Length: 609
Figure 1 (cartoon, rainbow, N blue to C red):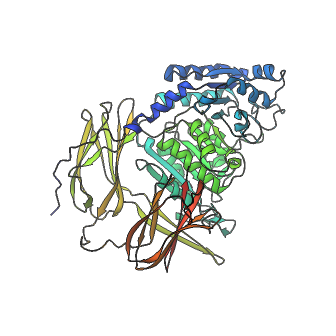
Figure 2 (spheres, rainbow, N blue to C red):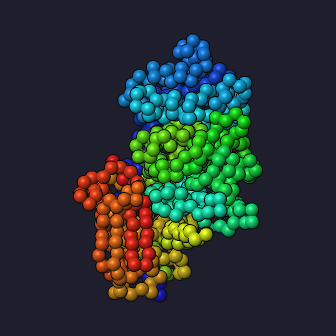
Figure 3 (cartoon, helix red, strand yellow):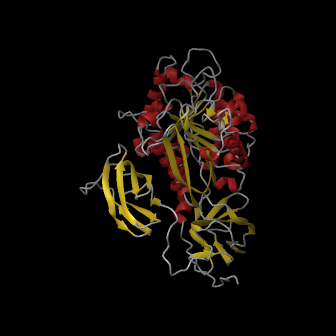
């Protein structure tokens, strides 16, 4: 007999999540207080003014438009000197207090071979990064968010601008706005294994796991992990490549890649090769932000070819709304730190693109010599954020655990009456996975989790400012303590997300009188990144001696948190960012290692001060 939960939990905390609701507006208002400039060659000035006028009419944000040649005439006697642009910007941005709320857009492509007549030479480049244009003081760090439209002709420029305007004014409201795709390279590299040590930064699956754990629980994190696909005789993984194409075409707000790459291809296994697969992208109405924690994917400044990040912007049938990728080889560990902070800024804090990247470069703890190689090919003032959200989903009766065959009712209280439809999804629990491989005596292993699949989906009409539904928890779904429910609601002009996480799902066969004994060794921490402390949770499948230590990035023990006999079960301990002498440690990456007599689990965490 199914249990019927009937006590209506109508006590709704309407103010939960209102800070999140107002965050994007906060950043728009800050941008209004900043200074914004578009630098363009003479042939692109009409389009530059079109974009500037749009931002004034839509957001009341003023963007000045300046002819690149006028800057040369004023600052370098007409000579085409990139230093002249920096000198001009030093004078233009005369109020340091608003630098972070400002922006520079370079409207045109450029190469290191500036003196060669070519359509790619529209706006000069400087050094390894556009950041050098906006180093306005003496600390050798950029001070203003900057981006570039790498257009070679008016047709390309108009395509990019029209897409940006449509992205803002006529978005396709659908679930894709709340979904993120993470693609992670496998452990193979040149016939050997990599990612064998926790501090190498090359365990791409582990990096994808860390990023998934960092993002907001309201987002649907979708992953293509190279380790889960078979390699063919050519050393490629075509099924993984097809899954990437299919998911991008379905629509994802963000498409993030972690692993090896270059200007043409993601991964040695060809997860995506732009020279042969670009035409397969048919997502013009669902353009994602593309980011690549990889080397040289964004090498736009080479005269001989157009890189992947450029081609994504100018492909008419599909591609991306903007790209963040590196012009040169990069470090996996620093990439991880940079993008963890960047996605916190985009997903959790609703910052605009340029401010989110600049803040991550300066404040994440990532090595700036590595971070500066990343450029925005796109508008730095663009908002690429998920729908605003709160946690006002109530399971009537507020049960702590859902059991197989439970009949339950759901109530959602919305912050306004702007919405007419709701697409509700109830997800199975996340679950633990383990992968291992060995080559020539070297052994690779990684623990990760899989996002639960929807077991109930329904389109619901919104009545005023609420919606409700009822369903049965079907038997046979994935049980665990990390299930969730997400509602995507939308109207004619806006959308919103509500979520409930974590939810426990049980098959109902366990006796409540017995201790909760996990089936495998598990460890996690929250929050991550953190300041000043984080709680490390761990579960032991067997009795025995355990040791829980914190290591720095050099592999040195910073602090021993636990070293004692423990019974099987679940535990928590807090690390407050101090060493064994109770002295505070500096910001950066740390690892905690849980060791038992039979197995060791290592996890990364990021301390931000």
